[in-house]
Image 1: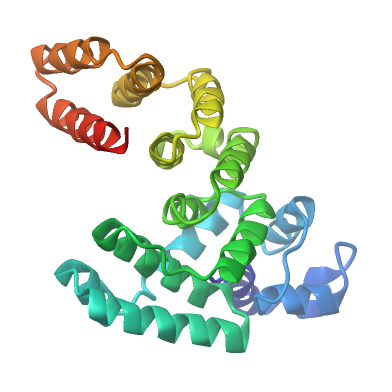
Image 2: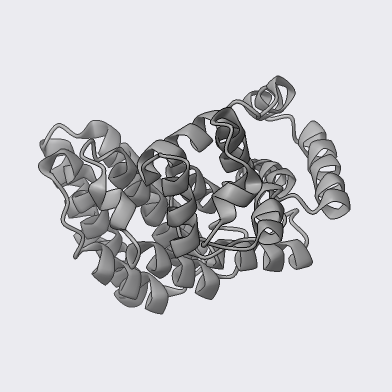
Length: 283
């Protein structure tokens, strides 16, 4: 996956700021060069200082990086996902993993992860090799700036890394919400809650109820505006699912789904019912 470094390099050069001037008093020029080329991660404080050095706020910088990255998913890859062509998915997964192993750029791993996630949804089989799962976890655990792009990256692999590591990264996100909370549009907050809801479901589906319950307790403490009432309902629903998995009493869950229908939230009710059916199949 592309780190923030390459985007920083592009913006730095656009302002005619030299590598030495950008690094001065913050980090070595060699480390800055390596970060710009996606070879290493640098500390959160250094990232913020470097962004300030090129006259941008963190949110401006991250938004710019996300726009650039979103344009780099090929039309071929989009078509394969839309067509659910699993044979072609396997070929592309092998292609991007080979590129990643050769060049050690996390962007290729990111593309492979997206495809592996789609393949897992369709075939219920994880094609991401274990060594790459470990590299993925190592990368995610080092992220300090949880932008929308990084949240999306994590969201695509919550079923591909071990449940205890999913929990660890989810808690890391919740403990580092500074940029999310500064966003007055609540766009990043919505993305964060969506990804962490998926992370919680991945724990439930893998029967890691201990970590799922802990994560839900922390999610319940997030101060959500009224516009995100769906996430509040989702948290309440997942608590009921956990109780069902412990005591096998489905009435509590079915009553919640019916109440959702009575409120006119039919789409949400359909989502909850699909989740409940899958949980019942796992028992």
